[in-house]
Figure 1 (cartoon, rainbow, N blue to C red):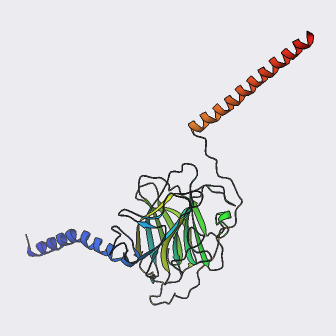
Figure 2 (figure 1 turned 45 degrees about the horizontal axis):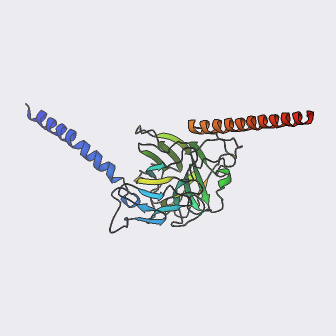
Figure 3 (figure 1 turned 90 degrees about the vertical axis):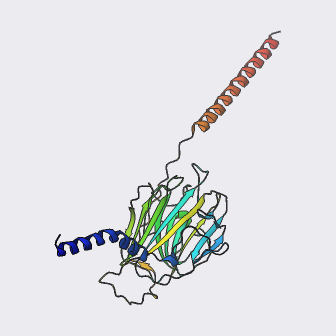
Length: 327
């Protein structure tokens, strides 16, 4: 073999062998570990590096449970390091499950906000917040003005002046949303939140197909740097287990049109447009199970039999009274 051909062959073999290694290394280089939460969770004792916990949250070897499937519980986890990345993606692996088949709730929320470790009425966290909320609403009762079924995924931007209205499912302040049935699956469920070039994109992988399905895309969304990531959940009269399994935060490349050293720390969270308020359309009421149908029919049959028996007794008594008058 000529010397030049040998050199090119050796060089090509080197690249073929080492390219996967370089590609894997390059992918990991973009994961920001200080904003990520992966198993095993425990650091020293029960603490988890870079993360703090509130309320009913418990840490196990396989998940961080924000709430158990019990009434009136609230929990949260909060990243302790502010995010100064301009473009980012947050991938969340989660599981929502419980005993409820027809009635369940309330849901959980993912946050990128100014004020961390704040309890409140918005799925366990603060109302009138500053920043971004991605709300995973599972409350299956018939709340306010909406034309969607539950569970429902929506995005909200707040500059501290807006109130999240539970009675209207937040539809009067949401940027956009989509239906997403993510309860009681045996396979993993995932959510992706991408903020890049002032565009917010939320996607889901709820079918276990390892493929993202876009839920919403909103342009001209302004978010400052220096805010905190978090997750919170709550239960009321209805309940569910709300589990966070993993959170991975990826730093995305700056676009050519973006200024590298631009100071975005003082930007006021805002969006150019909101969805118009919508009229209320009731969710479809679930069909009765076979057992409930049987019990309902049995009750009706018993009532009919009792009425027939009472009618016969009344008729017989009236006949006896009639015969006595004849004698």
